[in-house]
Image 1 (cartoon, rainbow, N blue to C red):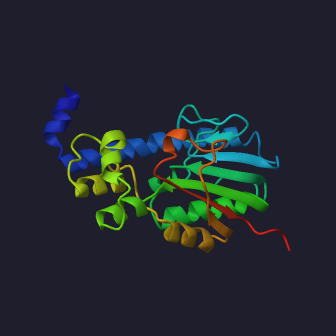
Image 2 (spheres, helix red, strand yellow):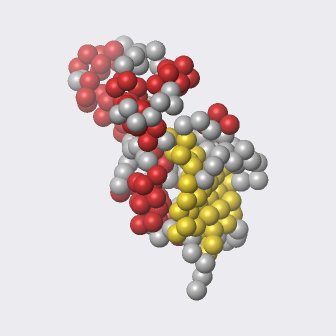
Image 3 (cartoon, one colour):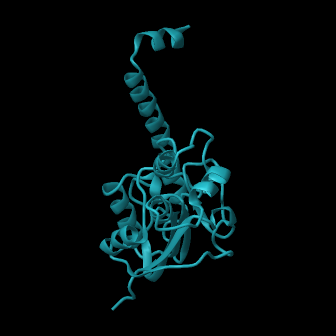
Length: 224
């Protein structure tokens, strides 16, 4: 009854804002729990971090996400609770597009750079936005829209523009879309070098994301 009364008295916009506040409170609680969890490994070296793991946890890695399946629950819009130069490799697949660009993205990449040891690798995969745009513009005939309709997008996506919009926003879950040039520029500004597109790695990447993902490796320079 109370919930129905509130819905009848509050505008849709205000109700959405209240829900967002509630969501952020839950995230904050999970983050505080994660800080305590991370405290148990702070001081260790050559860490292997899997950031934004969701349900795709990796054996032998420290899996970090807000998901209950993660080893450590952290809000990665906040600074990482690890020491400088303490990580050998950081992996992130289909996470970067979920945080706001440019401010949150740059903070995240700078934090990844900070905690990596010299010579360490940041390996990232994001949805490849060059593909749908090139096909929309008639510069590609690789079948993006047919594949998206068959495999990825909801039934209401019928026109090419509806598919483009869903690719970009995913029901308001995606915050930014990347091509290689944009991702490489963001990584370079964070201090990374040797930024290179790479092929799908069956020992590292998710098979169900092989098609349609832009994979990139970037390195923290060796100590001088």
